[in-house]
Length: 63
Figure (cartoon, rainbow, N blue to C red):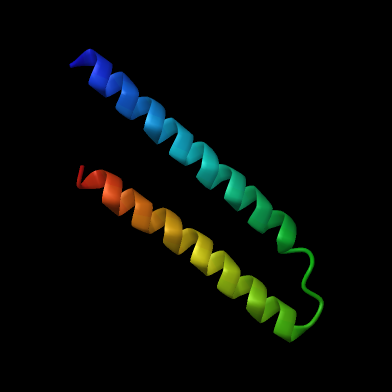
């Protein structure tokens, strides 16, 4: 039982590390858009990244 919990914790830690990395990239990219069109694309990409993480979180919660 302990092994399974440790493995699950490790998977969760890796998932959060990936999410933190993506958020860091989004933060850096937030400084780049210099037109309304580029900003709109940035917002769409950022929303997609957060949506992916939320979808993965929901899937893990059900396991």
